[in-house]
Image 1 (cartoon, rainbow, N blue to C red):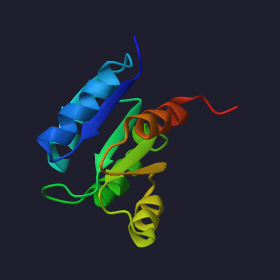
Image 2: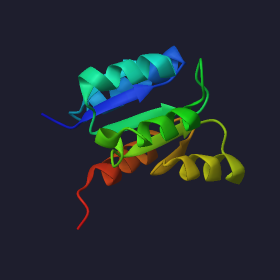
Image 3: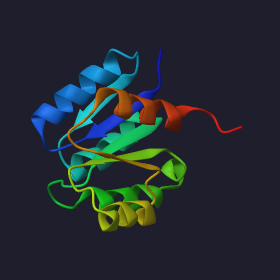
Image 4: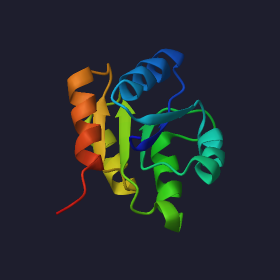
Length: 124
C-alpha cells in the first residue's frame, strides 16, 4: 500500500483530478473541502503527506498549514501547497507557515506527481 495523502481543496474539479492522479499512482487518498473538515480528518486518517489549497472556507490553507505545524504529530509531515496564487509573496507566506513545496494551478500531472514523490522520499 502506498503512502496516505490528505487532499484539501474547495474545488470539486481539483479534488477529483488530484485524487485520481494520486490513486492511480498507488497512494491512499482522503479528500476534504474545508479547513475545519481537514483538521477533523487528521485525527482519524493520519496522512504521510498533506496537499493544501491556499483558498479554503473558514480559514485559508496557509493558516491551516501553520495550525498543522503546531500539532506535534504532524510537525514534520510534508505539506504541499496547491494554488492559483503564484506570486513570490504568496509562496513566501506559505513557506513561512511551514509548507515544504508549492505547486501552481492549473495542475500539471508530471510536475505535481514529481513534487509529491520528492516530498515522500526519506531524507538521506
